[in-house]
Length: 238
Image 1 (spheres, rainbow, N blue to C red):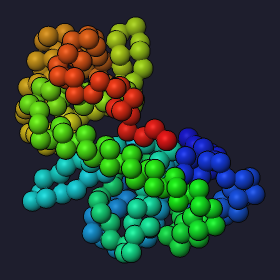
Image 2 (image 1 turned 90 degrees about the vertical axis):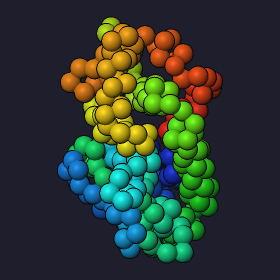
Image 3 (image 1 turned 135 degrees about the vertical axis):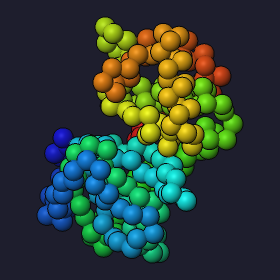
């Protein structure tokens, strides 16, 4: 749980008196798993600072879902719409687990950004990071077969949510096959088949929806050198 506003990259470096002025503008909100905070194309003006829990950012087309990113504690969501000329949401956001946020009104956020230009600069940096992530998503969706897509995404999850254990490299998030399929633009059946193959080949192990990478070198060899610089796999690295 993030309790200090200065721990959010977009507000880091602000003087203490500025932090104290901003805190009364924040409203704590808690959301249950599967709650949808935003619907794409809806008109609303709230900005959220994620204090705990993870969310998925996605869009729908003809009843099909494509997951654009996973939002984690320390991130801000809704600031892009706040900085644009309208308030229509560009994507939907849903809680993957219980989530705690601070909510701030668009007008208050804009006044803070105008008072402290570093907030504008950080918002620009966040936008650049998101474009980079979307570029990777386009590569996955466009150029690779299912095995390469799944292998890359598993390693992406590890570099963002993983740690080394006695049983292998564990991803500290319960991942279901539907989420993987919706992040890769493939069917759940093809993801299930690929994961079974990876387990049979002793590349990964799955226990209670937790993924363990058993053979990291072999998994990386399946990625076809799609990301030689591992730090570029980070989803959020301000």
